[in-house]
Every structure is written in structure tokens, then in C-alpha cells.
Image 1 (tube, rainbow, N blue to C red):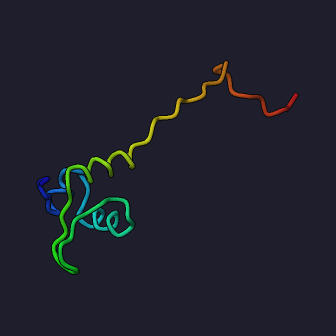
Image 2: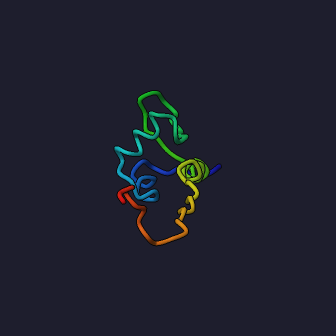
Length: 76
């Protein structure tokens, strides 16, 4: 069985607040374990890694103009 991680530990691992973690859980962004309704909430390493993967975005390359000059306003 995989080790269960508390809300506080999960928030520290992710570098976010417990409130942000709870918001992600309530919005269905991160999976969690809860044995009894209104009981303690736990997370797994796999669930945390899946959440990180969902939140990871590739950087988009910056389009550079062919010249460093600013475009003219159209005045003659």
C-alpha cells in the first residue's frame, strides 16, 4: 500500500497553501483518499505527481521581429 500524505505535508511538497490545495481538491484537480465522509483527507505520491503534470505547461517561444526598429505611425 502506498504511503498516505496529510494535507499539510502535501501543501508543503507542492509549495502551496492548504487553502489552495483544498480548492484544487474541491474542483477535482487532484485525487485524494477519504475513508469516512467528513473525515481526514489524505493524498498519495501518484496523485500529487498527476496534479503537477496537469499544472505543467510548455513554454511558448517568443516571436521576434526581423528588425529592432519600431514600426512607423504612417506619418510622412
